[in-house]
Image 1 (cartoon, rainbow, N blue to C red):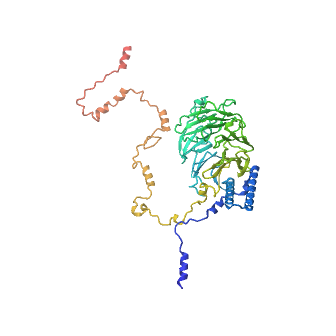
Image 2 (cartoon, rainbow, N blue to C red; image 1 turned 90 degrees about the vertical axis):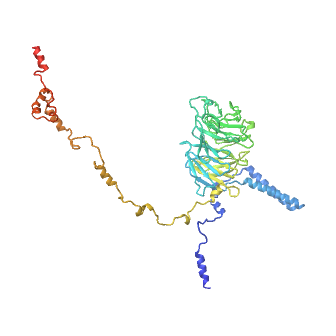
Length: 573
């Protein structure tokens, strides 16, 4: 009986586990933190959808009443109930969009003008007006939502378009330069394609673009082919392996002054039979993807308002329905089989940016685009329209700035938007979305556990111990400076004479110069013969050096009594 309280106290003091402990939380609680606020969302259903829904509900009630009154066969009743359940499930699926939750990727500081997801939906790349391209990996990112790499591929040029290849191992960069660039998925440059000669008038004879790029994209079936559009009024088709020259040139001949108009958007059809393009003069044209490229096969002038930028073209999976997003605040649907006028048109969809795009939903029941707004005057919205009538089915208020780019990845079932305030929003639904943002939301930032910290222990540096020290003083700087000043120890050579009294030698000074001028030197006026004869008697009486050695054998010197000058004077007399 006495051991029981001791055992209880001891067990409470012992830890239940060792090492770094992971905090277990329910995934539903984590997802609830990223749930969107209903106050920021506006839902608008068209009248036709409301009528259709009410009819379906009424029809379901009538079937239920008749089934309760007339019970003839149990098997027929079960099949009726099963059919009604299937219809209700289909209605719920069609009405459910992956927009219940959102995360914000905030690392750009200017407008996000380009978005692309790889085919698997695991990696997102964003481009912006701040010249940066950022890489986001959903599987490796935690809830701080930071990019794992940032590059500046094109200097001080804005990024207009980014697009992954069909295999996802490389992506295309379209910027404000005249040269397209190809990078691998990790952000390392593969190729930079050539720039054309700006002094050639005929654009067919240049090997590249001569003006800034505006659009680009990959061939839908050939991973070795891509196209680029430029402000030089051409669309060029390139081979990935040939960076020195394009494969084909499509020249748009505008009727405006100068004969040129910038290409603002282009797109391949999914069956790769057509290449559609739009120009700044408002024209919309179709080329045969396999040539000839002399002139377009179909063309509509003033399809959109002239001098506005048609920012996006997209084809449907049926390959004959085409949608364009114009700078005149319109979205138009076209039929390639009857390419004369728009089939449907939606207006008052404000657009301020040349990169504003339009997309289809994965089931192609809706057409989605973003709208622009001025700063401080409302919300930029994501507008979802019915494909056939272009009636607004739903709108979402995203942020207090323009919504430029929209991307809906069918594999992970998530919607990504890029805004003018530098924010990237990723919308998802935990129930119907797969991977993507769900992977990083549940991953908390790494916290340092007790095992990660180093215990305070003495640091042993062997070379600092006394046994390893040398006997030399700690610092020899002063000694070396003193030896350097000693001319003998440093073996300094003699310095040249510089100024009076330097190095034990007297040089010239101002006083000496004055004395030389005052005392005149008369050695030049003296006769050299007389000057030498002054020392003749001295040399005989006191011979020095080698004079005594040669005195006996030295010939007797006979000096002339007169000089040549004296003889000349006597002759003249």
